[in-house]
Length: 181
Image 1: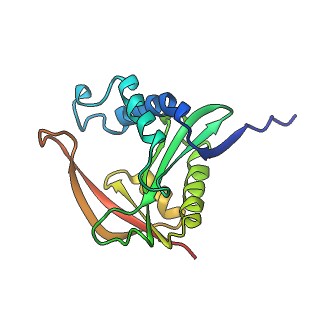
Image 2: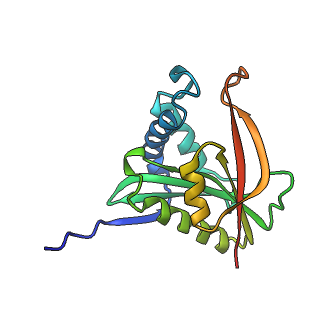
């Protein structure tokens, strides 16, 4: 007996997706930053985050800024943000940036990340970027391995970011890049 094929896809996000993206982001951040920052420092109110997403999805300053959502049936299980690279050593005309690649922690290993990453790369290629960069936490071995297996490589850039406005905990990040042929 064969199992039914799951209805999975990736598309450009709509303003109506804001609440689902926000709820996913809050869950994912709570998992990713557990132990790094106090739980009360992370957003808990997905409604407030959803308002910011609605505003962001409704108006973009650059047509190359995109939010993609991975879907299982009509349920948002991940999202990616692409646009021109903003690092000072990047060319915003030639270099795209995968600013975020976030999956529902309960959906890891089900192919959504691969579909979302491929769609993000295809979107950046369509926007005529010839290279893409992304930042990953230095100790996020699974994400770095996933990106490396997909053809991304470290480019020696690194940074430290404060996780709160008070200069509290900091995370180290490494930048990865890939060339488009």
